[in-house]
Image (cartoon, rainbow, N blue to C red; front, top):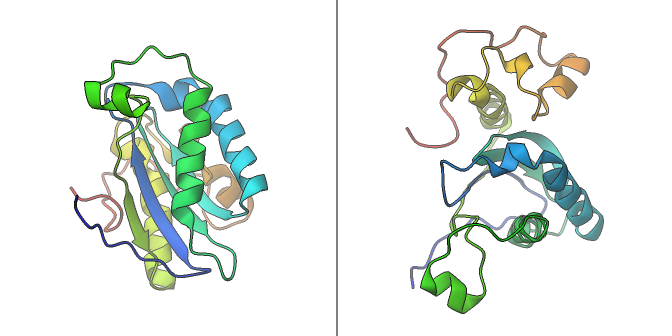
Length: 177
């Protein structure tokens, strides 16, 4: 089994990308209420500050800051995925391996995690995730996508409401092209 090296810094801030196994599926946006319920339930059980997020139909990005003394983001991530999956009917195709392990066929097993290094890195990742619906063609403007923290950032005066409009800007952060 591969030995994936993951950053584990207590109280740190991390950027995540999590994907559905079937990238053509649209489960996340279609079941956004179940997603929010799963996140809120886990936040009560295992506190975490969600700095920013965007939920797309088939993947999501988030920036989390863990509590001081805590580096277990994997527990939170897997608990959210598990709780969300339980809220959905079992209709997805599953491999024999997943069936034998009692696993659903909803999520990719692996995920992308990045330890935020400094304020500039933080800002680039926040920009990247908020711009993601435009990048993937789900919205013409960042403000048009309802499943993100962008409106909260506008309300806080961090972004103007027309930030990220229709430009083809690329952000040097997040997933690899």
